[in-house]
Structures are given as structure tokens and as C-alpha cells.
Image (cartoon, rainbow over all chains, first blue to last red; front, side):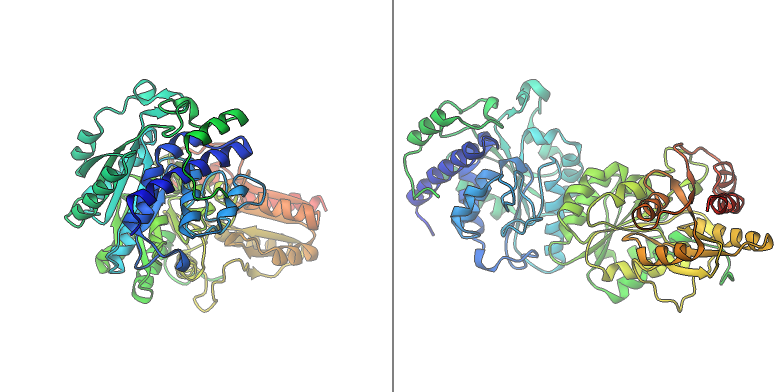
Length: 281
Length: 315
């Protein structure tokens, strides 16, 4: 198992990858990618620990992960590459013609580590329920994880899926919502207030945890608690508070960096704030 | 062409085929959005309760769950009305099934005008077009009970997303059980030399009736059943039109986006020839009995005869 210090270094490197990737093509979504960096790092390195050298679409005998809010692909690509799913230098092809690293993640270009295309919001929880159900049918005791954005919860399909998961006791499913309170047009409170998410998911029949998604130790402990709570007849929800743009002071806490790339000077400022590196691609 | 049994509904062919798959292929699972009886999925549900998933009135979730079930090797068959199988969930099918290349079988009943009295809200006439536009999607519209059963069994063996369209009313059952059903391979029902009639779904029997009427007028019509609209059997269409020199298409769908549109496009590229289309022309349906609706919207044998004479006059 990697040490906390090693994971923190990896978080810093992942954030460097994110800002460099979106800067290079002057497009992409840095805000929630930076906010969810700890989540991806702990999920792959502490929680799931999948075998990157033996990737199969079916993933039998392995924990599976689905990214529903596909626009935060930069953080996923960085973590996948540095975990060993594909060569780290391939990060430089992000969003460029003929790349496997499409703007939004896809199975279509054969990128190892990805099992479902996402981007159009609201679909990932349903997909994760299906994959969790297949695991149950196959007698496969591993878990299925899914990440959604909080703005994404405005999509009705999410609540169809939330109702189904509880009614059918899909308890090998662990969902996380990135509660950063921001979406493209502004704060979620202003665009369409999500209300009390804990009360809503509890009313839908879920076991709900809350975590600090930018605090590595707290997040890792909560993810482990989620896993311990699985298998008890209830789907499990981790409401994960994060700051959009975490790690870069001029990006933090603003919806304006949802889908905007830094310019040359902003990139340099960001990189000086993300000093720790394991070697840029 | 002889009827082989009493009239039967194509949806029952689906139900019987699905039940057979349940016995022969343990990876086949089924999902339904609160229309188990209408889709004739109740026998599968009773025999294989662990492999049947009632999702309630939540079609978007059903498509997503089906896509997820393929990860782990399952072959999901989703069932609801054609309207709710396509237009309602187009984005879910596009992203989570077609673009993701998932092995989901979207099985859709009550397609077209012959749904009848429920009216235009439920009579989708655009579904073939919606589905055939999706890259990698196979689109099949069988003509009777036997062919729907055979198609249901065949699509389980096909790797990739499929849209299987069938309907509600009892119609003649004539597809011989000894003819193997091959996806993408047209079925030549009768030979002819004056005009080629390409028909799909419930309009195939109408095309057979039309060919009989044309014969009485001294016209030799070749009737070809295109059960697979995508991929289209280009060879069969070209070979027939090369012989007859003109074409008629017949389907229970909008002219835009349907079988006629596919054949006209293909002939335009490879063998420009006169073509007439028996289809709904940019209109919604309405309440009525299936036969009344087919007559009012010009989807019957008489309309096919008129179209045949017109396309022949344009040679």
C-alpha cells in the first residue's frame, strides 16, 4: 500500500497533469477535475486496487468504476495512466485528433480502463446498477463504484436509478456525489437548488455517508466505511464535499473554471502552486 | 403464399422466442418497464425470475441498467412499446449502448399505426429512422409470428446492439419455419419480372396480397421481404431491380427515415431506378382499428397496387 505522503505527491502530480492537459488544447474541464483528484487517487490506489495489466471489459473478479460526469476526464486519464493502464506520455494527446483520450471518456477508441462512454449526464448510476446486478448474477462478490456530479442530480434518470437501487437492494453498489455546489451557470443553489441531499437519498432508501473529498485521510476512511456498510440490503452513498478548482488559488471555489482552460501565465502560476512532482509527461 | 396457422401477433413470437432463449442461453436476461403482459414477457418472467428485471415506468433507467448488465457478459433484452423504446430514450441508447458498443437488444412492441385505438401518442412512425441513424445499430422489423420468434433467437447470437420492432395485432403467419432467419439477408417470397416490391413488418402480407391483385392484371411482381433494414441486403435489392427495372417499398413507418428511404438512397447511388413508397407521409396517426388506419393512411394492398403501376409507368 502506498503511504499517505506518496498519495499526496501523486495528487499534486495529477493536478499538474490536469492543468497542463487542458492548457495544451485550450479546452476541457479543470474545475471539478481538480476537486476530485483525491477521490480518484484514493479510489484506485487504496480502495479498488484493480489490476491494470489484465484489463477486460467484463472485469470479472474486480471492482469496477464508472464515471457518470464524464467531463472530468482529465483527472481520470491522469490517474489511469499513472496507475499503469496506458503510457503516461499519451496524456499529451488529450482532445487531439485521433486520440484515445477523447474530450469525454469512451470505449469507442479502445482506451484501457474505460468500460462505458459518458458525457451526456445522468446515465452512470443506471449503468453501475446494471454492472452490479451482473456481478450478483455471476456470483462475483466485488463492488461497483460510480461518481456523479451534484449538478448532474438535476437529471431525472438519476432518481429513477436511485429508486430502483433501493427497491432491488443493490447493495454491492457504492455511489459518490461530488458536492462542489457549482455548475456551468453558477452555484447549484442558484441554478436549481438541490435541497437536502442527505435527506433525499435517505428517503430513497440509501445508506448515506458524508466525506471531505479534499482531505485524503478523511475520504479514504469514509470510502472504507462505505465498503464495510455494503452487503446489508441498502445501496451506499458517499456525499463528498469538494472545492471546485482545489489546489490552484485563482480557480478554487468558482464555477467559472468548470470548463475553461488556463492561459500561459495562469498555467505557470498554477504549476508553482502545485510544486510537488513525480515527473511531468 | 399460404398461411401456416391462425392469425397471430408478432409480439407473441417475441415472447415465445425469448422463453426459448431463456432455456438455451443462460446469459440472456430480460428487463421490462411495466408492460410485461403487453410484451408477452410473462412466460420468461415466470420461468426465470432471477434473470428478469421489472424496472417500473422508468425507461431511461432500463436502458442504462441493460448497458451495465453487458459488463459481466449478460445479453439483456429490454421490452416496452416502440415509442418508449426509442424516442423517449434516444440519448441513453446513443451514448450508453450504441457509442459504447454494448450488446443490448432493444425489443419494441406496438410499433406503428396498428397499435390502433390508443392513438398517435403511442403510434410511433419514426423509430426505424431514429435507430438506423445510430452507427453500429442493427434494425430488424419482422413480418409475422414465426419470423419474430426466429429473429428474437437470432439476435441473441449477434454481438452488438439491435433494435427489434414488432407489433400488437394478430396478422397472418406465413414465414416457413424451415427457412433459417439470417440477419441482413432478404427473403424472396415470389419471383417476378415487372416490378420489385420490398416490404417490411406488417406490410409484407399486404405486399403478397398486392402481388396477387397485380397478377390478375397481367403484372408480374417480385415480392421481397426486407426484415433487416440495417444492414440492408444491397445485393438482393440490386439484383431484383436490375431484373424488373423499378421498385415499390411498403412499410408501417414515416416515408422519411424508413425502409423506402434506405432503398431509394441505395438505388440512387448504385442503380438509379423509378421508385414509389407506400408509407406514412409526414403525418401523425390517430385512433381507430388497425385495418381502418391502414386504409386511411394508404398502407394496404390497393395502395401497393397503385404504387406498382405508377413506378412501372416511370420506367
